[in-house]
Image (cartoon, rainbow, N blue to C red; front, side, top):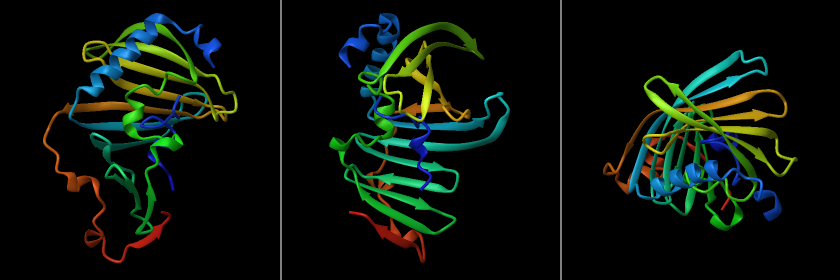
Length: 216
């Protein structure tokens, strides 16, 4: 299963008290602001692009996707996959195989959800520093460089860009140890729109002949 969140973002894991003392207070203030702002949204809908580059910066592929979030619920549409979560159950649908894998959402297991990527993912396992500000189009973004404390992670650096005006994440770049770079960029973001709960539950009737793999 090619999980959307394994390279992230909308990818990145649930990011040693002595080490945290080295963190940049300015970077923490920005990240805390993003987390607090996100918690005020009743719903979030975003479109994003996902680019893979090699170590030399050459683009290997570019794809796009959308995500909807409401409380602990989420729905992701990305490159032939759909991921549904109603807050307790997760359905990962692979269009090419016409197969859906069903699992339980275990919040205590450290399982990554899109919501965690917008809140306090940075608190425990990263060292972070503010690299400064720059203009991207008509936006002013603040770039934060994050280094995992756990050196066994498959990546060695994450760069998070925050839209200064809206206090929302604009992009995330993950640098893999193997050399590839994974870049997620938010192309549009809307909040607090009405969303029916049915959006976040897989409806088998809409997928004729689908094979179910139930891991619950």
